[in-house]
Amino acid sequence: MTLSSSKTRLASLRTELERRNPAEPEFHQASREVLESLAPLFAARPEYAQPGLIERLCEPERQIIFRVPWQDDGGTVHVNRGFRVEFNSALGPYKGGLRFHPSVNLGVVKFLGFEQIFKNALTGLGIGGGKGGSDFDPRGRSDSEVMRFCQSFMMELHRHIGEHTDVPAGDIGVGGREIGYLFGQYRRITNRWEAGVLTGKAEAWGGSAMRPQATGYGSVLFAGEMLSRRGEELAGQSAVVSGSGNVAVHTIEKLMRSGAHALTCSDSEGYVVDEKGIDLELLRQIKEVERARVSEYAERRGASARYVPGGRVWDVPCDVAFPSATQNELDRQDALTLVRNGVKAVSEGANMPTTPEAVGILQEAGVAFGPGKAANAGGVAVSALEMRQNAARDSWTPERVEDELAQIMRDIHRVTYETAERYGAPGDYVTGANIAGFERVADAMLAQGLI
Ligand code: NDP
Ligand code: 2IT
Image (cartoon, rainbow, N blue to C red; front, side, top):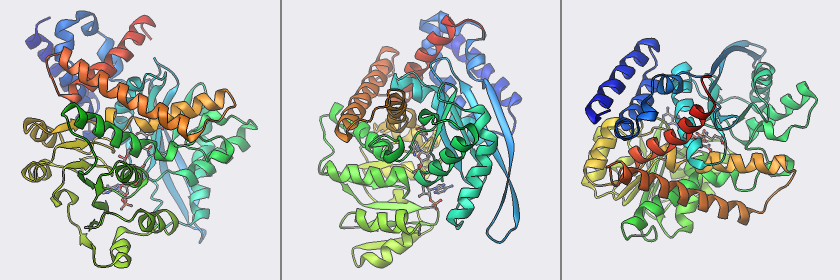
């Protein structure tokens, strides 16, 4: 197959996928990027282009949608929608987080599940791809309301998950508190101590050391690898981070430990820039203890910090950028600003935070760009290490987990870099990650027959 006939085949697949999955723009965006990357692979290795393989990969194995009724503290009844998309289990049990956010719908869960297939394959750890969540908005809800919601959500989800079947974890709006309530309800319904059914548990009852840190730390490690390929290091660099949740906070922490200066954080209402570097203790107090907004940080921090309501964090000049909040938060205009300000590397802590136009601009300008499915794979990788510890009824030291995480991130960087070179796209981590992830899943699917 020539390169141009590969491109034609993949373009018609894309058209068909968009026709069959209407009104799912995020899923179209995520699948389009992967399909576009595969043309050089199909041209060089016709076995991967055989009819049916890519079509199967783009169709989830199973999609579950369910009703989640719950009562708020005042007794009012609410009805939310729950999702679990079990996308691909060729490499292992479905694995991927749960997102609780009002923007969640089937297309969002499918985009996340699709990305997860390739990300999980890149970790090399034997996990399939899935994702789930709900349009429930945890903002402003009491602990008891969140607990009742989680219990109702698990009342249905429990029949679809299991340590050998499907292993959810956290994502936006789902952290340690929610995993605790979900696990408690699963245990009560099933009458089993099945530690490996969920990851992101607290260390005291089956969680892994370093799981909360893993995504942010991994994203910084990936940026460090990209910079070192260019003869540079993180120490001394200025960094801009978006978001102020799990991934952002641990990105800032790891940047500080690496000798870099993290200047910003944000939420959906605005951003903070702190000339002295973010005060992590204050940020944690506000976000993790008080569950308040980042505007509060600027109020308490004093003269070094400024709050910009509704602003874009990408306006702050920096050497490295870490989009760590949500999808499509860094657009064309933001990419032009970053390039104009001399950014050297962008590492995606979030899933698909950079729009396709912005990715093009950054790559065109020679910026090292680490796509989420490679750069943020540290979180799910440590989830897989948590499953391994649970299966062995063991628990590892933080040092051991951190060493393994660092090795996994180095391996992901190397395989994406080398794969991009092999397929004629040197330095293009998007192509490298998509092809390398695809090859691993496709090999397993081909070996396992038409299922
Ligand atoms: P959290 O819920 O802990 O934090 C989310 C952060 O993103 C908050 O600061 C939130 O601000 C902001 N945010 C969420 N939605 C929007 C929006 N629509 N517009 C602007 N800001 C928004 O989630 P995580 O830190 O866990 O997740 C962040 C990203 O990282 C997501 O893309 C997630 O998929 C990805 N990811 C997470 C992993 C993990 O292990 N947790 C692993 C790999 C990727 P606000 O409070 O105002 O909503
Ligand atoms: O997007 C992601 O990789 C996650 N939210 C983490 C998934 C997991 O199973 O740890």
